Image (tube, rainbow, N blue to C red):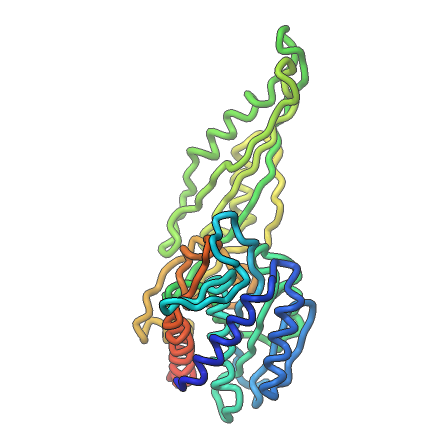
Length: 355
């Protein structure tokens, strides 16, 4: 890799860091990315806060790989000791909000795309998609532009994975549950206590084990994460509301998990969404084959990303460490960006030459 490629990638990352880009508020970073690709004489498109482009010699007769990462961030937490929007560089690290999640993956994919952009007679097409609202799985992100893109066959999703390859990812199902009782005075034998009505269901969520276990993602995990009931100390509560966070593996659909739950509990169960689906890629798929052939560590990811919203086979890989995401004084090593560009380029070269 040329030294000026790394220098340019670092410069772009630092520019991104200095611009606040919270989910749904990414207009300025979208403008920066759009203008940057325009400056490279690329035919670039924008819809909402999403920016995308195709390789110069795109051929509809060939399969298409999308290179996707996001430019939105969470808000900085209270533990920051640095200015989250000051892209400072010290001891081989670049500090700043979004540097690790997922700025490093974003710029690495951009410069990988530029590497292949003008090549003729490639066996694959490439689409670069720099998207919004990933942190909230928002409908203004990758979903908003999916039907505007060329037909996509598979995807590389850029997220901080320490350049390991996630070949499966858990989906997310959030349930709003309500146990119903009847209001009454606590001093008298009146009413039906909704908290007590909820107890058997709460215990079921704690103890139940789904029968099928994924080879890559393990067990489906259910956690009751919030509960609320009652208005006054002397009133028997008529309702008990609680929230269940469920991480669903690739051996179940969200609909199957929801059906099993409704068969076992008596409370009212309402899913917030069935969009954030589990994903996996077959061992026979070209992306799986090249990752395995090159010796990349393969794993199942417990965290969600835009993989959940991309309806084609995908892998998740990128520079940086997932444990740094959303942490105070977030940073990325300069060397990780270098390895990110090299790693993405190596994967695509192997894909282009796969027999």
